[in-house]
Image 1: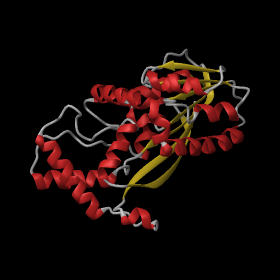
Image 2 (image 1 turned 90 degrees about the vertical axis):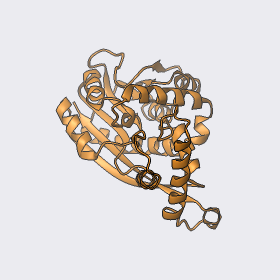
Image 3 (image 1 turned 180 degrees about the vertical axis):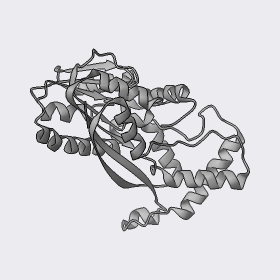
Length: 284
């Protein structure tokens, strides 16, 4: 995520992940699905390049949506995992075998030796990095020569409906100086940064996914669960915030009502949201 106030954003993400760890599994079906798709994206590419695995690191492991399938798929490989939120790490550790090695750590500063891992895998983590150049340099540093870096992250079209409603509501309400809405990197930007860092053989698959929610406020609650939080600063309690959110909800319901064939959803005014998921692999 691109932000001038990345330190504050990172702290807020860490706090939100930490507070939601206990109930995360019941609310993060989308994240689990993407972790499964990432693994399906990785396996055939590993087979094609005949990479011999001895060590794997899951970066941003959450509660283990990717860590556990990695350990099951590569049963003879040592699987390590990190997450910025300690309660997430604790939850994941309780769900896995003793062969997994967990640490509380940030993808922007990895606590490992140079060339320590054969495969780095990460699902929906790097869009929250405060400095993608630094994060990729760290990944390159700890990856063994010939190793693979495989990850998924959200792209520019993610939440495009929310951004449109935010812009329109701000204009109608004539509110200036509001915190900027979340922005994500483009496919070309990510590939450029990977190459700049020293990675080669980069591949990318982009998939637009549509998720349905009862209303816009429920969508925002879901974003908080995955670490994105409210598009406004959480400390902003003034009336302007409430007015903008109310106007956004009205616009969203009018412009982005779900066309789902599920009569139960449409009868309750369900809305939809776009997620652009980018799957990358690169070699050192």
